[in-house]
Length: 298
Length: 309
Image (cartoon, rainbow over all chains, first blue to last red; front, side, top):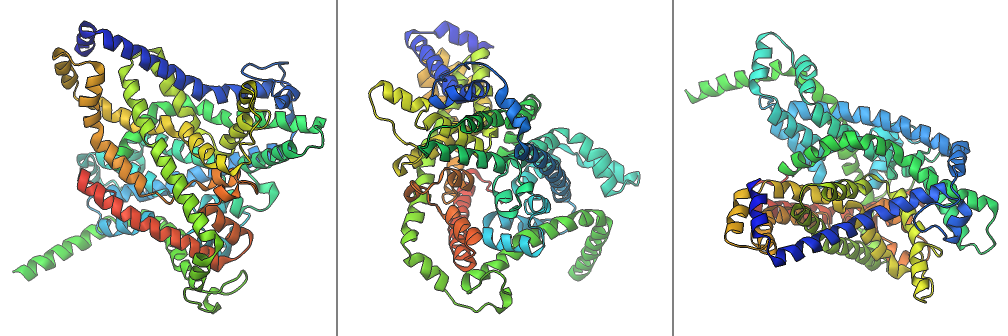
């Protein structure tokens, strides 16, 4: 408050110029950030023919939802959506359970061997066998072309686990554990009935981090799922993208089908981002906090 | 006496372990995960020293020493892969590192209100988009009939095939990454600025400091520890260039610039089944990474008093 007042008193000539410059820069940032997003939405609602000819600059023309209708008629895309939803729900649930299983015991100062276990886990952040040996392990486990290949190899993100552990350490008071113990409460019961209800913020952060990661996942399905019917949305989208850009370099005239693919591309980008846009206001409440917890133990 | 104490404490430890058996139960699946998906693959790097092909039993594959490594070091690709990987990452740090700091400082100079809120909320959105979507956006903007080429055309310039030309791969790769992550990466600095004591600014105002001076004399020095830690962490990941986007943007025409270590491992290992060579390349990358991480972590510890450990 007083800071602002003091500023007002002192607002000299150079400060006024400074203010204006900052505002202009920020407006510029908004334009750069928003333009590609707005253009995508506009293209998805426009006639694909105009899009391909490069007639859409900012606002949609010949507005219609034909591209969206086409998306929902596109079998591969619909399977992709279904697969992505399944993989995301399944993988995020496993992530949550296992990350909690790791974070809670490691947050307990009375755990004998805590340091050793933590070091074993932390070491994996510093050295990895690389993607080929991991691929062979997944293959030997018979997980290729099953959803488990998406779920298990990334079941715990060590960085997220540390965020969660830090949260437990700093928000669950030792006295609570002592009194629960006195009442004969077991560790698992204490975790489920007391610690987790206290940890809603960090659980939301975890759902957000893991959920976004899985919804956008590209690498794991690319190498582990060769069966096309199992492809998640991102792989199907990539396929559409590739056929569209292949069509662009092909000089042999633009057919009706190519226009359709072009429209589907933009509509799919929008539709695939909808879950994120819906979740965004909820996530926003917590994600700043998440970054801060991460920062403390960076 | 001392022996007795030791006995006692050992007894005490034992009781604590027994009392906490449920905690160990929780850790069983966790350790199983780390062993199966992290430590077994670490053993798997022995493939790098073997002549191993799909369908073979790993134990039976013949040892070949460092053959796979020398094959890689002698190959035409070695210099290109290392150069591309390193130059992209360094380019990324040079451009992508300062911008979030500048954004955070400028945002701090804005009064609370609509403009500040919109910048903050808008700049986070791209962070949540997938690499496939980002590359689609690049295609949309930079294709032959895209907006960028139309602007060029307006100034009488011939269209440029941005997505196909090798010389444009790195700028597009890096700048789209900056666009995507600038807002997200600025969060940490915004947090750090919020924790600066407002009394410092008040005192400076009373002494007649301009806002520019306050940025240089107060905000930046107070941000320095955070900046240094973030920079060191960045240096620790100098061999990590995003695989997804590189693969998605890669085509036969721009391969000279877009071929990086991770895409090479994918191509040779997963697609062509040359496991020995690709594991060796991956191991080479891992080792450099580990060395860099250890060094940067030591430095971070020295600077901040707390590292990743």
